[in-house]
Length: 452
Ligand code: AMP
Image (cartoon, helix red, strand yellow):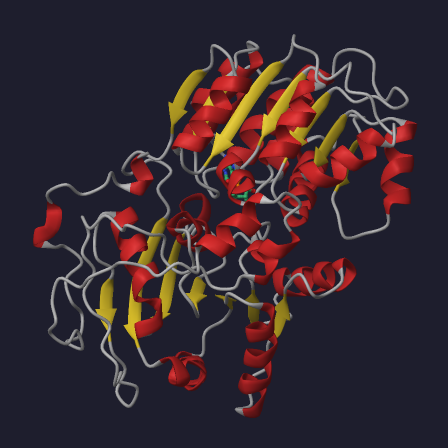
């Protein structure tokens, strides 16, 4: 189906053509006509599926009619988990709406209140915000929500993971009851469904994570290695492969800084972003990375959330994240919009519990390799795909989580210190290369994550 059949008007179609889009992605083809009819939607969709245009284009279409930029008012509200994603969505609004006179603003924490407050007071059409800062500005009476017509919850699962539930529900309580609701989430977990039940009544549910549809084309594999050899292995891989560009995920901000110096000692230039760096520096580094001026960017999970680069070929997990959905989000940074990508994880014995959760979530084992000279002395056992953990596995001391505004993430991080109860299926060494990704544990497997 061409874009012209979706019900969008000329100025929007022109903008999309100028961006080089030739046809809508599956989610756009199905969801845009429904959104234009005013339907409430709950869509399971990964980053990379084209979900931003899916909600931005109908919003622009609807807001292009009617009064614009009234003081202290907005007509559409998009809630996102991170400032980077808020900025990214605003950029998309500018690009898709370049032939319309609509105004948007990104509202997020970690920067001066005043410019954001002033923008809201002056009046905008679309507010793209992280929940905590928006609530602050609402209580300062910089904005009233009585004219909000459309609410978007973007990356709802991620917002819940970050402990934003209280801010989200408090904001939603102040919105007009008569409004359109669009919820997007990589996964439709129980918590997401609960949030949806309370906020998105009579919604049409769509899933774009079906096999082959919107599924990123990502070659995933892992290398087993001792923890203290990871930085040497990474340097070795960089030197051997001469990668054009890579985004390297690490759990802590301390680890990110340390890795930059370790690489530097081996003659490899890199940069890092994490919550300890100022917003201005993070934005500059992201812009440099996008422009190709930085080859290797080391990032904690939350910081990299909004990175959207058309041809990012490689994601490296220096540590494995928890929860497992975070792994899916991370590797979704590559293989976007139909391009192919590669995701490599460096896995030591310490990562085993998180590996179990990730492979369980994927529904299959990730292909393993060892690199000559870096064979692990501490084996990483093979995951038990249908094993039910009694306690949560260990979450790395993710520094970003501490900046979440509600208490939930604090509770999560304390519970993560409980002793995990995982077992290995095999006590045999796993150092054999290229282990098949299929396993005889296929009974009772969880659903394929691309198929939630
Ligand atoms: P998203 O899933 O919204 O993060 O989008 C991922 C990437 O796909 C972005 O770089 C978009 O510019 C791009 N994109 C979105 N829709 C299309 C389309 N119909 N054709 C080509 N690229 C697209």
